[in-house]
Amino acid sequence: QTLVSAGGIFELGFFSPPGGRTYLGIRYAGIADRTVVWVANRNDPLVSTPGALRLAPDGRLLILDRQNSTVWSSPAPTRRITAGAVARLGDDGNFLLSSDGSGSPQSVAWQSFDYPTDTLLPGMKLGVDFKRRLTRNLTSWNTPTDPSPGQYTFKLVPGGLPEFFLFQGPKKIYASGPFNGAGLTGVPNLMSKDFIFKVVNSADETYYSYAITNPQLRSRFLMDGTAGVVQRYVWTNGQWSSFWYYPTDPCDTYGKCGAFGYCDTTQAPLCACLPGFQPRSTEQWNLRDGTGGCVRTTNLSCGAADGFWPVSRMKLPEATNATVHADMTLDQCRQACLADCSCRAYSAANVSGGINRGCVIWGVDLMDMRQYPAVVQDVFIRLAQSEVDALILSNRVLLHGDFAWSTIWTAVHVDELG
Ligand SMILES: *[C@@H]1O[C@H](CO)[C@@H](O)[C@H](O)[C@H]1NC(C)=O
Ligand SMILES: *[C@@H]1O[C@H](CO)[C@@H](O)[C@H](O)[C@H]1NC(C)=O
Ligand SMILES: *[C@@H]1O[C@H](CO)[C@@H](O)[C@H](O)[C@H]1NC(C)=O
Ligand SMILES: *[C@@H]1O[C@H](CO)[C@@H](O)[C@H](O)[C@H]1NC(C)=O
Ligand SMILES: *[C@@H]1O[C@H](CO)[C@@H](O)[C@H](O)[C@H]1NC(C)=O
Image 1 (cartoon, helix red, strand yellow):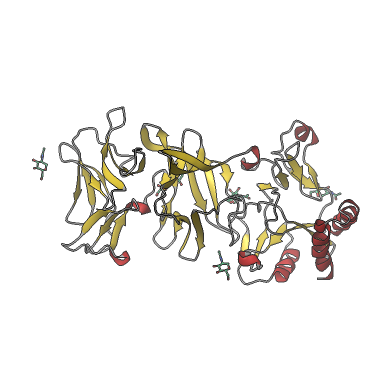
Image 2 (image 1 turned 180 degrees about the vertical axis):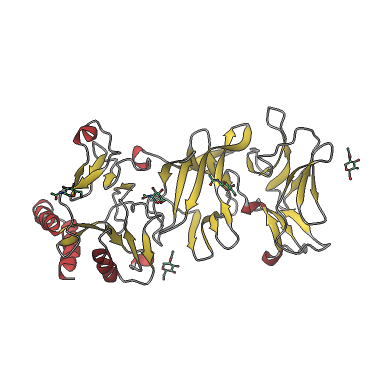
């Protein structure tokens, strides 16, 4: 027996992968593929079947085994449950317990969308709800036939600017790039014709969510435990086709070029040092291992003899430990960076609509940068002024007549005046 959503798009029921364990899950109903998109009891499989799903009088959903023992229970409901309470599977794939049966947002006592498994469906949130103390992450299945948690997790790491990380166990292996108000700076093709995404970053919650403009389209975002990648699939011509996946290329590997290094797929070797920096170990660098990163060519003075050099085509450095001042102008940001000896770089915190707002200050090593063909936003790297002068000079020679020259020079010139 299954529960089928009103439009026949999803169904909820028990399923038993090979191995003798049974789970309650949600899967597609209207298409030939029966991919499971959510599992209730991934940590608590049923071993004696048949199983039963019951709505207890206290408002908890229970999974009972053959002996009527509870093997899984939803948390205590957050609303007072009335006799009219109803649990219903929606056409969006959300299994929702409404305290009064109305289904209104105010009546939600529990919903499967708050407890993602390995799949993000349109309308689900990936992130942290600070008010409700909910962490919504995607954790891979252990194996294709075992829904228990596997080694890969894709999740938000809060702090500074929001950013999503792919972890293999405790190790970061990929990062989306910080959110700068306009996009995730490491996911250049996040936006497309059929998808709308949003990143919300407020005091109450921080999350990523996406919607599909074409209601006929089926799409899922999967933490794939076999390939170790996050994939967005769309259902076309009777099969799932991969719309994109990350990490995609070697430059997506987290921290590929170490501190103050950046990666560029169009150059060999892939790793280079930021202007004003040199490889920490030339030996290691020559062996094409950039993870040791880069060190300054000239030390900072920590005073007036420091300046800034803008780089503009970069995935922003990891900013989870950076400090964000939402109300500062870019000029105030520069002053704040100069006044703080530990500041290594600054940038606008929000460039939505092409307008610089706020300030982000990196008091930590600049990690996980890569270069893109298109301008992302300016990051101002703190250098000894003598290095800045040398860079201005060499760029005048190298980029003479080029549009890039005038942008770079203008930015530096403003800095010199400011
Ligand atoms: C389990 O509960 C159902 C419904 O209350 C009841 O009909 C059934 O006999 C019970 N089974 C056992 C093994 O106790
Ligand atoms: C993912 O979120 C769940 C709670 O929803 C939590 O129990 C688990 O520890 C999280 N996993 C990671 C790796 O953060
Ligand atoms: C960025 O600025 C715009 C315009 O003021 C605002 O609507 C948006 O909420 C800001 N985004 C973040 C993440 O602060
Ligand atoms: C630069 O700073 C490092 C670390 O503080 C120090 O070891 C080194 O001697 C300094 N170099 C110069 C040229 O002052
Ligand atoms: C950020 O801070 C955390 C906790 O102090 C630390 O483990 C991590 O390495 C830091 N990350 C960076 C990029 O500095």
